[in-house]
Length: 581
Image 1 (cartoon, rainbow, N blue to C red):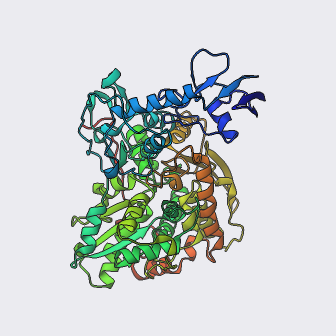
Image 2: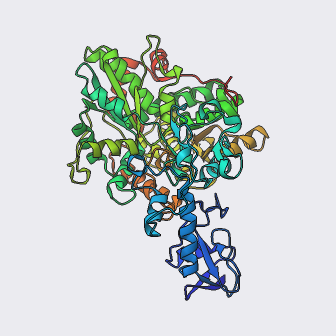
């Protein structure tokens, strides 16, 4: 431990701790913009400067390690003046259209400007106006709002190991973009949105489909059906001031009904359906010598990463569509037939914690032979919050609503899809019962429940057979896992990979929590606990116990992994290059 003083307070922290973290441990706020702990520690914005006794110049606290006997001052006149000047210089070349910005009132630059008392910009000068990059189905890039903090670059390169954006040019002409001035859709971007949630301002955002959904709701010739994902219900409340990890399932349903959707189904139903299909697919591959390890395919960011970076593993991917695509397919087929509705007159809207789902919904593989998409529009959790506010709905005071029955039933196995390790555990619950022919009671496979960091692996014995399984989240961790498999260092039967660190609950479309408010690991923990509390509180916790799902097989699909199920619920993937042809 190292002992030091910060603003006269005695502080004791571990050796190697940065001064900014030591101060925060002592409940002393040091502002920052470019800093992300363990990810982006470069001292570029100069907003976190402090005065250190014995040092001639101010020091960037995010890169300065503590030392024994150090005396730090975070609130001197010199420090305040320097921070204010740095902010004014950043703002001098910033698009300050705050009222029309998607990050208005949740912008770290805006917050710091107010806290530092920025009343005027003393350095007004030349501004470079750049066109927005609207090429992606998922993400909008607005260089006019970029403050060159490089947080998005660090997350893309160091965490996700995708590395499609970088600082280009020099000085005043520096920009953050793909190489050779290419659009983001022309490189191997996986649409995961981790750059969006790491951005402190509005330089990166999801491509909004709110207006299209409002238009559909207003169209009397269309039946508009909505489905929310498991992770949405443990995060949406944060947009309305509720504590992180609050479960708002009933209020979510009521809000969707008040907005004007005609039917409200649950993506959790699709998660149970996915487990039946994926579980039987795994059993069939094991019994019939199929391609192993089988890798889950619920995460479109991971799928696209695999197509670009590890195309040799595309045959290992489960052929199952993701849950919301399955529900969309069932709505446009089974539901449409039962209610004598032309599928062309049905609009399916998915509420997802994920920006990559927007890309997924527009994949040609998700369109049937008649040109009908499974899912028409995808809204992120953040977009839904904006719609609720636009509709003037007091979310906190809403009563508890209930999903509509046809695709509204779900089990605890479906709920845990939202957390890393959840798909694996849900699958094992069903696979174990199928292989043993028993209704097993010990169903908490905690060995495969993911933590926020690293890869988790386990050997699970089911019916006398050992299943070698692994769980990875974040494509950086997936890269390490796949490299080990290629090198012959690891061997598995079944692998779950989620594209975002922490899984869907910390996905690219979830509410943005500034790093100075809560560390991302804490956000993951709170939302994860909420997910598992839903699972524990439900009477049925195995996907094959979902009566509505099993009746769907009896009435329409036939047997799991059968011909009709494959036609509607399965797909294929392609091998992609690193650049668009």
